[in-house]
Length: 60
Length: 256
Image 1: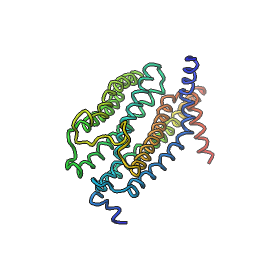
Image 2: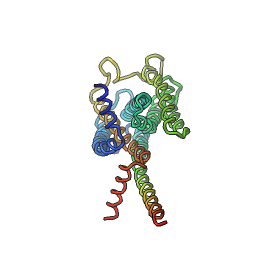
Image 3: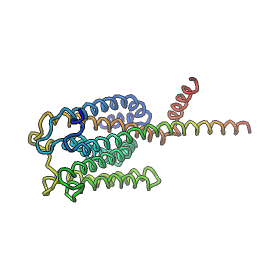
Image 4: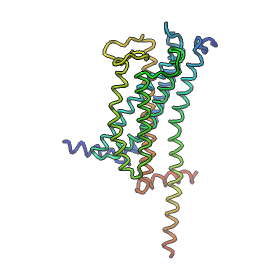
């Protein structure tokens, strides 16, 4: 098992390549998912503010 | 005939329809991509036989080559959709182009760095100014240029137009990357799969390579759709369907 992970004498090269791919692709995939959440929050807040302002106008 | 086709395209390229349809498709692409990438990695790392010349170091190929293919494929998607946006004024095409750029840049970066990590034990150098490597580096700069240009122009329509033109002009670099190993004497090895002859790679190594390549492609589709949906939502924030969507989501939260 350990021998398999060592990849001959190239373990460091092989594993760093796959690890980097995992990190980069993971970041690229999860960043827009986080962005989506913040867009939903931001817009919800904006609409609430707008609704609030329009009721104030009506009262005046 | 042409008119009805265009009507159909405009209908499905409308933000509302795109948002709904892509929302249904994303999980399929994402899960299939994850499955293929896991299978391809296990096959590539542990099952595929050791290369007689390069030993285990060649296993980097299963990340390096699909990433390099994607760097070119995404560029072509970006330039094509940029051109479609330029000619037919379909906003969604511009959105796809701008959503693709960072993903393409990430794959180009991956191709360059994994190539460098592979080059060190095989060539004895992290980097050489070889035609293939230099052309790929230019590709990275094209992506970064696209993103910088987009960020620098405030009017989104003007930005999309300028970026589309940059992307189209940059297409010249794609055949240069592909044929660089034939046109010049390079240190980089020649093509083993994408050539007219039979692939000169054994089937036991070709299968994980194709699994990874397909996995990368589906990954790109899933991520570009998520990014495009975010952009559509944000730019359409003053239209009724976005307001309804956000409100219905909020009611779900508050009712829990």
